[in-house]
Length: 253
Image 1 (cartoon, rainbow, N blue to C red):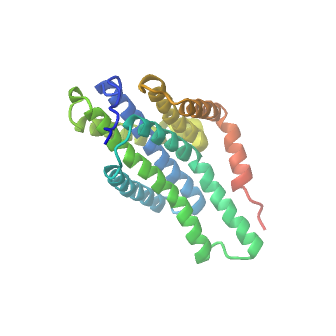
Image 2: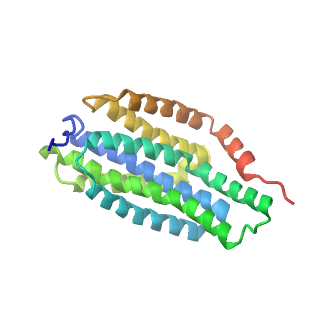
Image 3: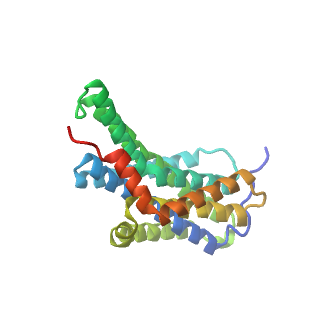
């Protein structure tokens, strides 16, 4: 059996692992806070939405870590890049998808005469909305032990508790900066684009600086994603206006 490729020595340096961990932990927590905020707007009951979002997120983290333990031998660096790209895609589009699910459910009710508060519609909306929480949680849960495995490839990096400490710090920074600075400054959709940009820049950084055999496809996708998300941050007002006017604002009957 061919052994799995070892991460490049540059990636296993403590400062690099810590920096990447801090950024990705920050982004994952921001995504969940964004989902809680958006679900509160579309589904109501703010306290319940935040509690359920955090609970599902933590449970999904555990499931993601479980799935990591069952992975086949693989190039951990390439896996991490893929996880960052998927997190960027899912997290940055999550608030728009929540509004899209809500708009689609109302359109279906208008077309069929079904009740929006009825069990079939509500069940579908709940599964779709909370499925986003689970997906981001799974990816984040896979991400953390992956970083620990990459760090452990170099004995000088030290035990995995350093990665955990940095992860907790990143989560705390997200929890504090989200209500105090991020949300008031950028709005929901601007924050989503900013977090997605950080994830995709992390993927681009790993792809170009810490991969022995860079994949042109990954590099192109990361560069394209970074360009689109940078536009989303710079013109978050346009994204917000489009999303709200197109998906959320509905005429009263």
